[in-house]
Amino acid sequence: MKPIIRLVDVWKTYEMGDIEVHALQGLNLEVKEGEFLAIQGPSGSGKSTAMNLIGCLDIPSKGHVYLDNHDIAKLSESDLAQIRGRKIGFIFQQFNLINTLTAMENVMLPMMFQGIDERERFLRAKKLLELVDLGERMDHKPKELSGGQQQRVAIARSLSVDPDVILGDEPTGNLDSKTGLSVMDFLKKLQKEGKTIVLVTHDDNVARQAQRVVYIRDGKQVEKVK
Image 1 (spheres, helix red, strand yellow):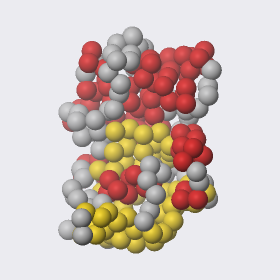
Image 2 (tube, helix red, strand yellow; image 1 turned 60 degrees about the vertical axis):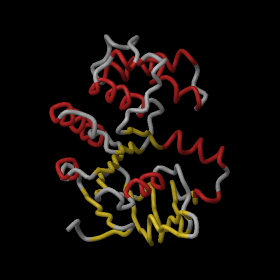
Image 3 (cartoon, one colour; image 1 turned 90 degrees about the vertical axis):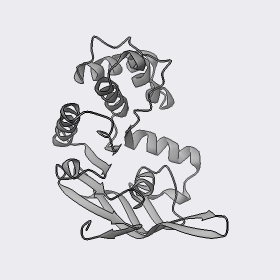
């Protein structure tokens, strides 16, 4: 399997007054095409910072992040947004749905930014919502849906532009255990169909379902979390 995202000696430093905080310190990581990878660490370990860099939402202070062999620091913001929009789908712990839009409209939204015409957006969103068993809830707004249903809308939205990589930030964190297992089963199904799945988590139960686990502590990759 070839790498689709690579982090090479990546540092991320934040300045807080006169103090420099090194959120990541020399991280080297490859995300391989078609794998299911979990990045695990305690709160404050740097895993969310790593997620932002893997998702090309941020650029490193030092080192290089490559998305399909493009050094993201050398791309313009508009070019990076286009490549990121096509290549990576995001699932967040807080769902990040727009409350004034229906499930259908939430799923259609990323496609609009990729220039997909309205009819194709509608047909694709309808198919995806049916895929996550929400065919009868398409016209409901987020507040009219349960937490598990909202997360399934978020998964459908993440798939709307047919990305190569699905990146989840604690995607089961706000769900009960039964619904969380359902979400994990669906993500594993997507991986079997060829998607690359990367989950950021502190949860052992989530991490052990991945093919590979990378542990991060104090901004560095470690052999295991002690």
